[in-house]
Length: 355
Image (cartoon, rainbow, N blue to C red):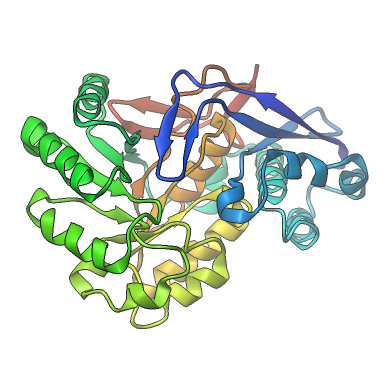
């Protein structure tokens, strides 16, 4: 079954509300969309929204990389040579995480649609459902509590709080959240590299009684050696995000003594499902737990991440809320979200339908 055509373009998906993290405020969202059409009419779809801050490439770079000449060599290839096609993708776009991710996801979708099975079934399902966290950006205490109440009312019980308002304000917000909600919610935090090693140690001392589930990327991405020097009880709570781009980073972080207890895998960092599963395999061997995260992404790539997450035995945490604040999308389906829990459908491929 040959590939008839591959096309790439951009889509403005917009946001229902802006939000702030430690290094930027996000007001709108664009995604790159790749469509792989087979001779029998099956269309596999992939999307991407890489972060230039993390991987050095943005939407514009991704669209440039996915030009007609770059995609032409894939046309006419047989989808049954699936792994050879993935090798082509990751060889040709090794320095373009967004382009690699969009193509990788589209090929996984097309191939497993052709097989007639959900992607997770092809990969080997280990998990059926997990709750996702939903993110509260950097804001004052009053607005933090108001947004948390909204999410609680919508059924979410895992809150991820973005830090970066200053250590005092960060702690104040978390203390108030615990006062208001008690043990009715799980609280995890994301500092986006905002703390120095000393600031982070102080933060841990000040929040030790708050029962934080995990602490995502508290220190700069390059500070891996400093992370190794943290006490083991702190390191086990640390989820590496910006420090973990691809499999090579996973090896470095996992080398004893492990610099963290959790890997945050994002398809937009590593370049798609295949490299994500390589990171997951390293984590499993090293005894490191997995968290699956995202940027502001279409249901397409969120679904792809969920399929990969549920095929990985070391998956413990989901942070796949990246499509929930989009004003529009290009597909429907993919997964079911109920009371904060994510479950895949039994549809072939990613389980999405183009609108």
